[in-house]
Length: 305
Image 1 (tube, rainbow, N blue to C red):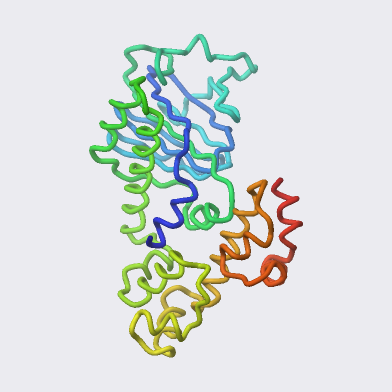
Image 2 (spheres, rainbow, N blue to C red; image 1 turned 180 degrees about the vertical axis):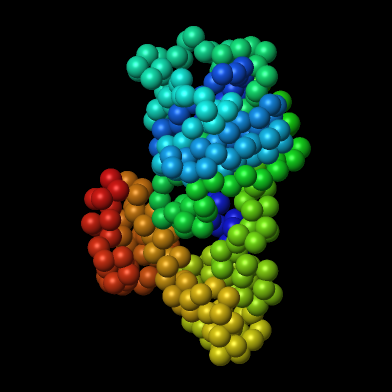
Protein backbone atom coordinates (compact mmCIF):
# COMPACT_ATOMS: atom_id res chain seq x y z
CA UNK A 1 0.00 0.00 0.00
CA UNK A 2 1.42 3.39 -0.95
CA UNK A 3 0.86 6.66 0.89
CA UNK A 4 -2.10 7.81 -1.21
CA UNK A 5 -3.78 4.42 -0.98
CA UNK A 6 -3.27 4.36 2.78
CA UNK A 7 -4.79 7.79 3.24
CA UNK A 8 -7.67 7.08 0.86
CA UNK A 9 -8.49 3.95 2.82
CA UNK A 10 -9.95 6.25 5.48
CA UNK A 11 -12.32 8.23 3.24
CA UNK A 12 -13.24 5.22 1.09
CA UNK A 13 -16.94 5.40 0.30
CA UNK A 14 -19.26 3.15 2.29
CA UNK A 15 -22.87 3.72 1.32
CA UNK A 16 -21.93 7.24 0.26
CA UNK A 17 -24.65 9.69 -0.68
CA UNK A 18 -24.84 9.88 -4.47
CA UNK A 19 -27.41 11.83 -6.49
CA UNK A 20 -28.08 12.86 -10.09
CA UNK A 21 -29.53 16.36 -10.45
CA UNK A 22 -31.52 17.50 -13.52
CA UNK A 23 -31.90 21.27 -13.61
CA UNK A 24 -33.16 24.02 -15.86
CA UNK A 25 -32.21 27.66 -15.20
CA UNK A 26 -32.59 29.66 -13.19
CA UNK A 27 -31.37 27.41 -10.40
CA UNK A 28 -29.09 27.89 -7.39
CA UNK A 29 -28.35 25.54 -4.51
CA UNK A 30 -26.78 26.62 -1.24
CA UNK A 31 -24.94 23.58 0.12
CA UNK A 32 -24.51 23.69 3.88
CA UNK A 33 -24.57 19.96 4.58
CA UNK A 34 -21.22 20.16 6.45
CA UNK A 35 -19.87 17.19 4.47
CA UNK A 36 -16.08 17.05 4.81
CA UNK A 37 -15.60 16.12 1.14
CA UNK A 38 -17.95 16.35 -1.85
CA UNK A 39 -17.47 15.31 -5.48
CA UNK A 40 -19.47 17.18 -8.14
CA UNK A 41 -19.30 15.93 -11.75
CA UNK A 42 -20.65 18.06 -14.60
CA UNK A 43 -22.32 15.71 -17.09
CA UNK A 44 -24.17 18.29 -19.18
CA UNK A 45 -24.50 22.06 -19.22
CA UNK A 46 -22.36 24.26 -17.00
CA UNK A 47 -22.36 25.34 -13.36
CA UNK A 48 -20.66 27.85 -11.13
CA UNK A 49 -19.31 27.00 -7.68
CA UNK A 50 -18.80 29.74 -5.11
CA UNK A 51 -17.55 29.52 -1.56
CA UNK A 52 -18.55 32.39 0.71
CA UNK A 53 -16.21 35.27 0.01
CA UNK A 54 -14.50 33.48 -2.88
CA UNK A 55 -14.46 33.96 -6.63
CA UNK A 56 -16.95 31.96 -8.76
CA UNK A 57 -15.39 28.94 -10.49
CA UNK A 58 -16.93 27.64 -13.71
CA UNK A 59 -17.54 23.91 -14.07
CA UNK A 60 -17.76 22.71 -17.68
CA UNK A 61 -19.04 19.40 -19.07
CA UNK A 62 -16.61 16.59 -18.30
CA UNK A 63 -15.08 18.37 -15.33
CA UNK A 64 -15.20 17.31 -11.69
CA UNK A 65 -15.02 19.53 -8.63
CA UNK A 66 -13.87 18.25 -5.25
CA UNK A 67 -15.05 20.58 -2.49
CA UNK A 68 -13.56 20.38 1.00
CA UNK A 69 -16.03 21.20 3.78
CA UNK A 70 -17.50 21.88 6.14
CA UNK A 71 -17.77 25.49 4.90
CA UNK A 72 -20.95 26.20 2.87
CA UNK A 73 -20.88 26.93 -0.84
CA UNK A 74 -23.28 27.66 -3.71
CA UNK A 75 -23.69 25.75 -6.96
CA UNK A 76 -25.71 27.68 -9.55
CA UNK A 77 -26.43 28.17 -13.23
CA UNK A 78 -24.99 31.69 -12.98
CA UNK A 79 -23.03 33.54 -10.29
CA UNK A 80 -25.83 36.10 -10.08
CA UNK A 81 -28.65 33.65 -9.40
CA UNK A 82 -29.84 33.85 -5.80
CA UNK A 83 -30.12 30.53 -3.90
CA UNK A 84 -33.52 28.90 -4.11
CA UNK A 85 -32.72 25.59 -2.39
CA UNK A 86 -30.71 24.84 0.75
CA UNK A 87 -29.03 21.46 1.25
CA UNK A 88 -28.85 20.77 4.99
CA UNK A 89 -26.94 18.08 6.93
CA UNK A 90 -28.23 14.63 6.12
CA UNK A 91 -28.83 15.87 2.55
CA UNK A 92 -32.18 17.37 3.55
CA UNK A 93 -33.35 19.69 0.78
CA UNK A 94 -35.56 22.65 1.64
CA UNK A 95 -36.62 26.09 0.51
CA UNK A 96 -35.07 29.16 2.10
CA UNK A 97 -38.05 29.14 4.46
CA UNK A 98 -37.40 25.56 5.52
CA UNK A 99 -40.14 23.80 3.52
CA UNK A 100 -39.10 20.30 2.44
CA UNK A 101 -38.54 19.75 -1.28
CA UNK A 102 -37.96 16.02 -1.10
CA UNK A 103 -41.21 14.94 -2.77
CA UNK A 104 -41.73 17.86 -5.14
CA UNK A 105 -38.28 17.52 -6.74
CA UNK A 106 -38.01 13.71 -6.71
CA UNK A 107 -37.45 12.46 -10.28
CA UNK A 108 -36.81 8.76 -9.71
CA UNK A 109 -33.95 6.50 -8.64
CA UNK A 110 -31.22 8.69 -7.10
CA UNK A 111 -32.48 11.53 -9.30
CA UNK A 112 -33.67 14.97 -8.23
CA UNK A 113 -34.27 18.35 -9.81
CA UNK A 114 -36.67 20.88 -11.28
CA UNK A 115 -37.02 19.33 -14.76
CA UNK A 116 -37.04 15.76 -16.02
CA UNK A 117 -35.33 17.01 -19.19
CA UNK A 118 -32.97 19.40 -17.44
CA UNK A 119 -30.34 21.07 -19.58
CA UNK A 120 -27.89 20.75 -16.71
CA UNK A 121 -26.99 17.33 -15.32
CA UNK A 122 -24.83 16.98 -12.21
CA UNK A 123 -23.64 13.96 -10.26
CA UNK A 124 -22.96 14.69 -6.62
CA UNK A 125 -21.37 12.37 -4.08
CA UNK A 126 -20.47 13.14 -0.47
CA UNK A 127 -18.07 11.47 1.93
CA UNK A 128 -18.78 11.54 5.63
CA UNK A 129 -15.19 11.36 6.80
CA UNK A 130 -14.19 10.90 10.39
CA UNK A 131 -10.91 10.31 12.07
CA UNK A 132 -7.27 11.23 11.99
CA UNK A 133 -6.26 9.24 8.92
CA UNK A 134 -8.87 11.05 6.84
CA UNK A 135 -7.74 14.39 8.26
CA UNK A 136 -4.23 13.80 6.94
CA UNK A 137 -5.66 13.68 3.42
CA UNK A 138 -8.03 16.62 3.89
CA UNK A 139 -5.23 18.78 5.24
CA UNK A 140 -3.37 18.31 1.95
CA UNK A 141 -6.28 19.63 -0.14
CA UNK A 142 -7.33 23.17 -1.02
CA UNK A 143 -10.95 24.25 -0.58
CA UNK A 144 -11.80 23.46 -4.19
CA UNK A 145 -10.21 21.33 -6.91
CA UNK A 146 -11.47 21.25 -10.51
CA UNK A 147 -10.07 18.65 -12.91
CA UNK A 148 -11.22 16.64 -15.97
CA UNK A 149 -13.14 13.52 -15.02
CA UNK A 150 -12.65 11.52 -18.20
CA UNK A 151 -14.84 8.49 -19.09
CA UNK A 152 -15.57 7.78 -15.43
CA UNK A 153 -18.24 10.49 -15.43
CA UNK A 154 -20.28 8.74 -18.13
CA UNK A 155 -19.87 5.37 -16.43
CA UNK A 156 -21.01 6.73 -13.08
CA UNK A 157 -23.91 8.54 -14.73
CA UNK A 158 -25.10 5.31 -16.31
CA UNK A 159 -24.86 3.36 -13.05
CA UNK A 160 -26.37 5.89 -10.66
CA UNK A 161 -29.92 5.37 -11.99
CA UNK A 162 -29.79 1.57 -11.74
CA UNK A 163 -31.39 -0.35 -8.89
CA UNK A 164 -29.81 -3.78 -9.05
CA UNK A 165 -28.33 -6.18 -6.48
CA UNK A 166 -25.01 -4.89 -5.20
CA UNK A 167 -25.57 -1.48 -6.75
CA UNK A 168 -24.52 0.43 -3.63
CA UNK A 169 -21.11 -1.28 -3.62
CA UNK A 170 -20.68 -0.59 -7.35
CA UNK A 171 -21.45 3.11 -6.89
CA UNK A 172 -19.14 3.41 -3.89
CA UNK A 173 -16.20 2.01 -5.81
CA UNK A 174 -16.90 4.12 -8.89
CA UNK A 175 -17.10 7.25 -6.75
CA UNK A 176 -13.76 6.30 -5.18
CA UNK A 177 -12.21 5.86 -8.64
CA UNK A 178 -13.43 9.29 -9.70
CA UNK A 179 -12.06 10.90 -6.54
CA UNK A 180 -8.67 9.19 -6.93
CA UNK A 181 -8.47 10.26 -10.59
CA UNK A 182 -9.14 13.89 -9.65
CA UNK A 183 -6.62 13.85 -6.80
CA UNK A 184 -3.95 12.29 -9.00
CA UNK A 185 -4.49 14.95 -11.67
CA UNK A 186 -4.42 17.71 -9.07
CA UNK A 187 -1.22 16.47 -7.48
CA UNK A 188 0.39 15.90 -10.89
CA UNK A 189 -0.31 19.53 -11.78
CA UNK A 190 2.20 20.64 -9.16
CA UNK A 191 -0.05 20.93 -6.12
CA UNK A 192 1.25 17.80 -4.43
CA UNK A 193 2.18 17.74 -0.74
CA UNK A 194 5.65 16.56 0.23
CA UNK A 195 4.51 13.06 1.16
CA UNK A 196 2.99 12.54 -2.29
CA UNK A 197 6.08 13.73 -4.13
CA UNK A 198 8.24 11.49 -1.95
CA UNK A 199 6.27 8.43 -3.06
CA UNK A 200 8.03 8.45 -6.42
CA UNK A 201 11.48 8.28 -4.87
CA UNK A 202 12.80 4.68 -5.12
CA UNK A 203 14.28 4.74 -1.62
CA UNK A 204 11.97 6.98 0.41
CA UNK A 205 8.83 5.75 -1.35
CA UNK A 206 9.68 2.15 -0.52
CA UNK A 207 10.42 3.08 3.10
CA UNK A 208 7.10 4.91 3.43
CA UNK A 209 5.19 1.92 2.06
CA UNK A 210 6.89 -0.38 4.53
CA UNK A 211 5.98 1.86 7.46
CA UNK A 212 2.38 2.06 6.30
CA UNK A 213 2.03 -1.63 5.61
CA UNK A 214 3.42 -2.74 8.96
CA UNK A 215 3.25 -0.01 11.61
CA UNK A 216 3.39 -2.61 14.41
CA UNK A 217 6.90 -3.74 13.42
CA UNK A 218 9.64 -2.54 15.82
CA UNK A 219 11.21 -0.26 13.25
CA UNK A 220 14.40 1.66 13.72
CA UNK A 221 16.14 3.82 11.15
CA UNK A 222 18.80 1.12 10.90
CA UNK A 223 16.37 -1.74 10.21
CA UNK A 224 14.40 0.37 7.77
CA UNK A 225 17.58 1.39 5.95
CA UNK A 226 18.67 -2.23 5.71
CA UNK A 227 15.33 -3.19 4.13
CA UNK A 228 15.56 -0.50 1.45
CA UNK A 229 19.27 -1.11 0.82
CA UNK A 230 20.93 2.14 1.86
CA UNK A 231 22.91 3.34 4.85
CA UNK A 232 21.18 4.62 7.96
CA UNK A 233 22.57 8.13 7.43
CA UNK A 234 21.56 8.21 3.77
CA UNK A 235 17.99 7.17 4.55
CA UNK A 236 17.61 9.62 7.41
CA UNK A 237 18.95 12.49 5.32
CA UNK A 238 16.92 11.76 2.19
CA UNK A 239 13.70 10.93 4.05
CA UNK A 240 13.84 14.19 6.02
CA UNK A 241 14.69 16.17 2.89
CA UNK A 242 11.77 14.81 0.85
CA UNK A 243 9.06 14.23 3.47
CA UNK A 244 9.87 17.09 5.79
CA UNK A 245 10.39 15.02 8.94
CA UNK A 246 12.64 12.12 10.01
CA UNK A 247 11.48 8.52 9.47
CA UNK A 248 10.71 7.81 13.12
CA UNK A 249 8.74 11.04 13.54
CA UNK A 250 6.76 10.12 10.44
CA UNK A 251 6.13 6.64 11.87
CA UNK A 252 5.03 8.04 15.22
CA UNK A 253 2.52 10.37 13.55
CA UNK A 254 1.16 7.51 11.47
CA UNK A 255 0.90 5.13 14.44
CA UNK A 256 -0.92 7.71 16.54
CA UNK A 257 -3.31 8.61 13.70
CA UNK A 258 -4.19 4.92 13.38
CA UNK A 259 -4.52 4.61 17.14
CA UNK A 260 -6.80 7.64 17.32
CA UNK A 261 -9.14 6.06 14.78
CA UNK A 262 -9.01 2.60 16.35
CA UNK A 263 -9.98 4.12 19.69
CA UNK A 264 -13.30 5.12 18.13
CA UNK A 265 -14.30 1.47 18.00
CA UNK A 266 -16.49 0.68 21.02
CA UNK A 267 -14.87 -2.68 21.85
CA UNK A 268 -11.26 -1.53 21.45
CA UNK A 269 -9.05 -1.43 24.52
CA UNK A 270 -5.96 0.71 24.85
CA UNK A 271 -3.93 -2.49 25.09
CA UNK A 272 -5.33 -3.97 21.88
CA UNK A 273 -4.84 -0.69 20.03
CA UNK A 274 -1.28 -0.40 21.33
CA UNK A 275 -0.39 -3.84 19.94
CA UNK A 276 -1.90 -3.06 16.53
CA UNK A 277 0.10 0.13 16.05
CA UNK A 278 3.45 -0.97 17.43
CA UNK A 279 3.52 -0.05 21.12
CA UNK A 280 4.51 -2.71 23.61
CA UNK A 281 2.08 -1.73 26.33
CA UNK A 282 -0.91 0.51 27.06
CA UNK A 283 1.44 2.73 29.06
CA UNK A 284 3.78 3.21 26.10
CA UNK A 285 0.90 4.21 23.82
CA UNK A 286 -0.57 6.53 26.45
CA UNK A 287 2.78 8.23 26.99
CA UNK A 288 3.30 8.79 23.25
CA UNK A 289 -0.28 9.96 22.77
CA UNK A 290 0.02 12.45 25.61
CA UNK A 291 3.42 13.70 24.45
CA UNK A 292 2.41 14.29 20.83
CA UNK A 293 -1.29 15.13 21.11
CA UNK A 294 -1.43 16.68 24.54
CA UNK A 295 -4.23 14.43 25.78
CA UNK A 296 -4.50 10.83 26.90
CA UNK A 297 -6.14 8.09 24.81
CA UNK A 298 -9.03 8.06 27.28
CA UNK A 299 -9.54 11.79 26.86
CA UNK A 300 -9.42 11.42 23.08
CA UNK A 301 -12.01 8.65 23.18
CA UNK A 302 -14.31 10.72 25.36
CA UNK A 303 -13.95 13.73 23.03
CA UNK A 304 -14.90 11.81 19.87
CA UNK A 305 -17.49 9.62 21.52
